[in-house]
Structure formats: C-alpha cells, structure tokens
Length: 156
Image (tube, rainbow, N blue to C red):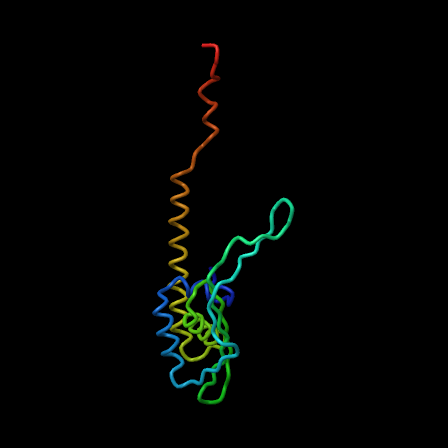
C-alpha cells in the first residue's frame, strides 16, 4: 500500500495506536490555531446496499461513524485544511486524523513524524494480510482428488 497517496492515509493511521495519533496531532499543532470548518461529529450511519437479484436497496444495519473538517492557521498566517471520516464513534480521533491529513497534504512541520506512523500502519496491514493468506492456505481443500480413487459402485 502506497503511503504517499492521500486516499490511504486514514486507513494506514487507523492501523496504529489511536492514542499515539491523538498525542502526535496535539504535539504537532501546539501553537497553531485550529478552526472547525464543520464541527466534529460521531454517531451511527445506516449501511445501504443493493440486492443482487432485483437491485432494490436495503439497509444492512448501523455502523459507527465520526467525521471532522479542520483548518489550521500557522504562526506565519499560512492556512491548511484537512478532513477525516472514519468508522469509529470517537470524534476526537476524527479531529486528530483531520489534523494529520492537513499536515501531510501540505507538508507542514511534523509531516515526517506522521510519515513514520504511516509506514508503521502499512507494515501492520501487510503483516495482517500475510497472516490471513497463511490461514486461508491451511484450510485449502483440493476437491479434484475426490474422484481419483475410483468410482463408487452402489451395487456392492
């Protein structure tokens, strides 16, 4: 997974310790002004899918969701925006991820610390994927061998 692509940042950051993300976001933005473009929110969202046969919509259920959109103002007056929407019920986490998004997207001071977290998240996801593949491999069944013994004769 490419750590330089913005679309992957939230997923990679969610793979690392959430407390670490919050602390780092707070540390990086110390002395910067933070303004909400929309207030951080958390709640439940309905997961809507379409039936495969009739293409009719149905609701699978509720999922926790949190979102935040922030604008950072640096001491020199420069501004940077970031946003995040995650399947979690922690709006403080969504705010921290939005701050991380702004810092990474604009290459602000501290983006190198966040890049380290992105790499840790990527390494963790790769390890999980490898583990899943090994579990799948252990449960693999070769059905082509079933008919190789010979035909079963019901008369005997």
